[in-house]
Length: 216
Length: 216
Image (cartoon, rainbow over all chains, first blue to last red; front, side, top):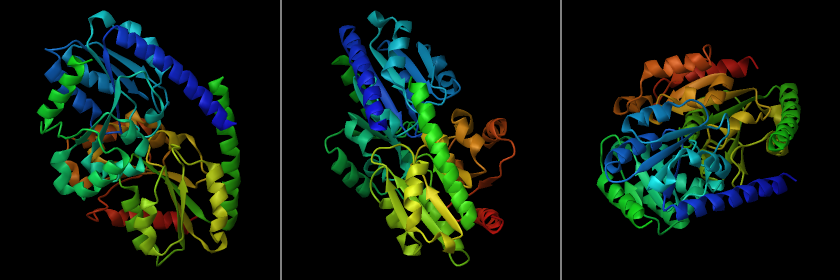
């Protein structure tokens, strides 16, 4: 019975996600669904990415958080429109909550929406938000076994960022194991090794996301 | 309607959890529900804790994972009974899955069961497994804002371990902010600063968990 209920929830979510996707396509807005563990660096990635892109493109941000608006506070100096969705305990965003907040933005005058999902490698992978694509962020300090232990996200992501590359020498992260596992889950996905705090490897990521926005 | 369904799921989970708790109490077995983000160090904490405790106490492990038995493989050299629960995409363990695997152990001949929950700061906090208490593990590389952003776990935990203390100097982790936020969520919880890989601060944790096992 619970499986049937879950199927209904996912079906309703999928229908609304398809509505969101059709609207964004019509308005030529790219939407990136950013998924990672808590503390992998989503907000810092956003800070750096907004800093680089905001003079070139019109950007908005949706911040998904269980509680608080701390992440939005970190981003507000960039002067882009930000809407916070507090899930009040919920472990992921869904397409209905995205659909409800889209009218807050001037979609005719926007190039890209970054959605920072709730910090969670599991549940956000199951819920289509209507995004153009999912971005998976993983950090070296989490260990090299994440792609094989949490395969759904890494299978679905269109791009993977390996953050905190500056800390790799202090960990037992094995790059060869990471690549083998990732290749087993998703062999063709582009992977960028970055350090958001040290500004390492960011140019290649910026180039890639710019290409996505231009070709949307 | 979804709220009602969720209430039913949680009610059924709670009932079974109370059965599990009554059984463990009768058998004088302590059960620790270990919860953290992916890659915070639950398995390494278990490796070190089993190494210290296994000559003194009879221990068993339940490994909750979405996929693979990698964590169990890392622990098998310790020679304690281990059961793996693969949730096949599920984001948390529940009391029904725990109840089903308990017959695999000789409860009359056991002091403590460590349950390594699925790597997730959110969902495992909502599901009582029938544990004696919840342990929250958080690492310095995740940032200092986790207690306030994921309050439920930190409110419910009977003990908190701050891992990867050896890496704190390479991060922007602010201890004062962490303590202020934690104090707002749960002012009285014991907190141990440790590095499982560098064996820093482990003795105080070992002393604390030994006291819990002895006084069960």
